Length: 374
Image (cartoon, rainbow, N blue to C red; front, side, top):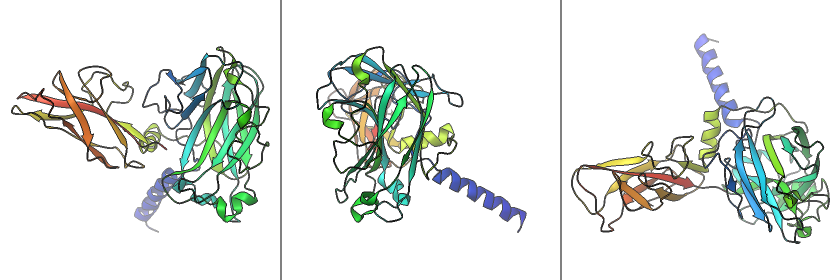
């Protein structure tokens, strides 16, 4: 074999490894936080901070999520959740959870719906001021409704307060997963979600440890702690890996650029990395020049860094006034603006005919966020 052929094969192998990988989780090391690195309140639900991690908050209390630099050896970032308003007595239908949805077409090699369905192993680093029994949930769903929804709650224990601990959980397929109704459609909807339960009311604690259930309320066992019971409670998570096989392997560290691109399939924006969304800045903005006065004109096209999962919802931000949406700036003067002709690859940004007008010899500028999250 020639040297040229050897080099070509090495390049091809490197590409395949980078593209396929072993970890189904995106941003497992919590390095990417496009929306905010600061604390943002969890919603019902929302994506508050660290990319790809969705937060549910459905109690009488409240908690925030942020990116933290507190991490175990080998990592530099983690996701931090912090109780800000306590709920010491959960009602039956109340809950608090952090999760990641995994795209269905990325789950096809799991062979769910076949007798050859694969065993999965989930591993992660966790730390909390509150010790006790927690539950993760593997949630097998399908966006078209043609397959059964199945839940797999599994207990793990945080043994020592404020200490990083590594957890490994095996998720084995059973007859329900191997049945035809256990299949995952090959599409861009949700295939599997992994939940970290922080608190669950009695409605959601009927699950059996390590057992698949067709009951969509079976997120946790009755041993699940109420993490929401004190404002001193925190919860840190990093090094999340979900892989095929009965054993965990070393965490698959990806480059920041690779992880960022994976995240941008679901959420992207024009702001430079590290600049908070809503900042009054022209850096990175979509921009065009006006040579003559007009009532409206284009600020340009935001071509997304990667093709997004679906047609995104776009929000347009002023470059002149902080945290001001629905505005396109003509130099320092705002006028009504919006995104149109939105595709999975781009969005057209324009100033509306709102009476404000666009002056000659000015720059028309706007920032944009695009959200196609699961």
